[in-house]
Length: 116
Image (tube, rainbow, N blue to C red; front, top):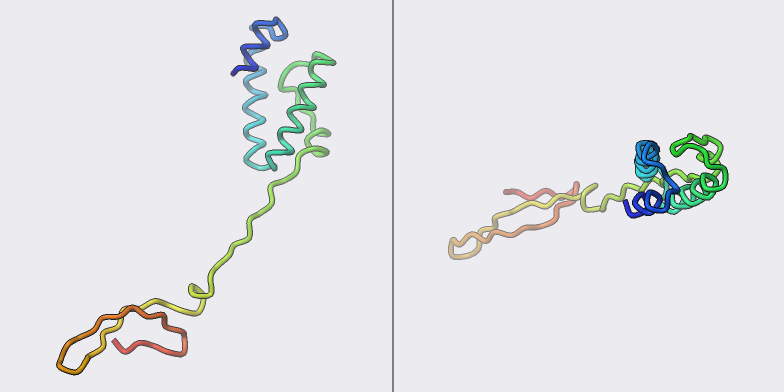
């Protein structure tokens, strides 16, 4: 919003262009969902330079710039721990001498099962 206010106060953006500028800004934040943030910032910087130089309407789509500058987000690998794959945690009751029952939580593998 600071940039919008600056552009308006310096007459670099006319009131009738505000809607297009806001649409462009929205598009930048939508890009952030699917592209690496650093590449989105680079795209935005280059777009603003070109807009200032050529004075085209804000929000003018540039598929060439998008293809050349925006880097898709890397998918984060799914990591599962070994305990979730082949082990489970179970509460087991053990009888102790004297009739007392001892409750203990143990990790059980697929080959060893707790007799509860």
